[in-house]
Image 1 (cartoon, rainbow, N blue to C red):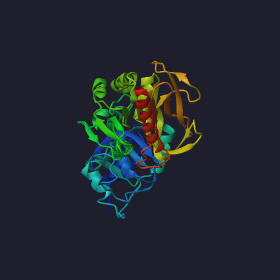
Image 2: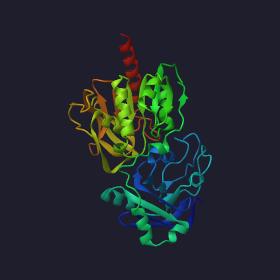
Image 3: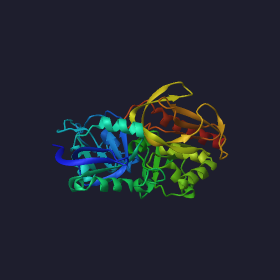
Image 4: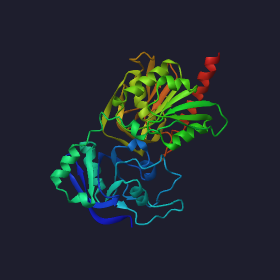
Length: 382
């Protein structure tokens, strides 16, 4: 059994309450409540560092049937603050499973709640927006409703939070190219996923994964051919140091590729603003238009902030980096999903081309990055 009959309650900052049963570890946890729409891939979602500081609710009703395994871990641990599901699987029934979902939730002390109406909660968030919340289970369930709500309201808003130091590697490390070596890339770990590093290594690059605290001179001193900014949690408006680092590296002429949080930071480095979305894009079924090809990509996404830039025109970078265009945008709400610099070697996308878990429509972006780096290096020699 993956659940017990310990009562639990999910409390939202607007006072809405949803009763259920304890799932995973017992206790109390707080964070921004968001929903993820993927029908599969809960392990990749749980171990994605971008979810740090958030209570994640799965809209798929049945979670846990495939268990957990080491191969699908996207980082060293589960990062979500809390976990909300409707029906946890009572058994694990997959040949790749090495343990149950509950085993990992308890190991990493992740408090969850089950047996509530996740459809109703999702509709509430879609109407009211993502909001602060708390899960109270076990002994914490017995505290008064007024006290629980007061504790939820004391939680900081996600806007204004810099969470990169919570998830980044403490020490630099290198993953060597797994095919014929063509160069090297510095990966700024803002919450990078294992799959991202693997796909860059598969393109022939030695991947130098560096802490988020590294300086621009230290990046340039590595002697790498390009810089990559990873996905990660938090508000891009609270990451001034990373923006300044990127501006210095772009001025040096080093090629750049960023995904998710890296897209938002490129936007800021170029001089655009960012803003918080009402409830964000989270799931593996998000349609995005590639403006250049006219092709629609089904993408994996996890972001609550977006770049504020016009999607229908080429504009000059307010920070002096030349012409910039929005390369991709969401077909659901026209949110910026990619940036392309026309006068320097830099581009980014808001979604997750590493597709863990998710569709593989966007895998070409890693090849595009490789081609850009090789072309840049060739141009420098001419």
